[in-house]
Image 1 (cartoon, helix red, strand yellow):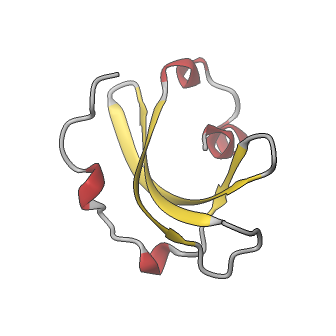
Image 2 (cartoon, rainbow, N blue to C red):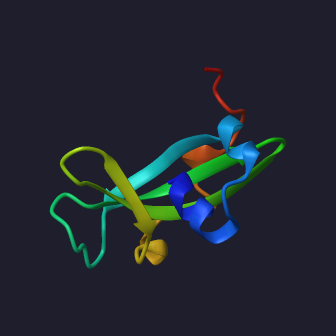
Length: 88
């Protein structure tokens, strides 16, 4: 998921402390890969958190994320991402 942000904003040192949480997940609309899921995602970097959506698929070695085309089918804001961030 953070790869999407690296592509857009470059490789910032803050990414070392970033946390990603998944919220609601559904089968992706217009999936291009078998088993592709669309999820609401909260990305926390420093004191800021943003909520977005992404599609995920397994490439055989690791999970890959890409921009989602399923936004209209996911809740926003996602109640599963509301409230305090769970401690690690």
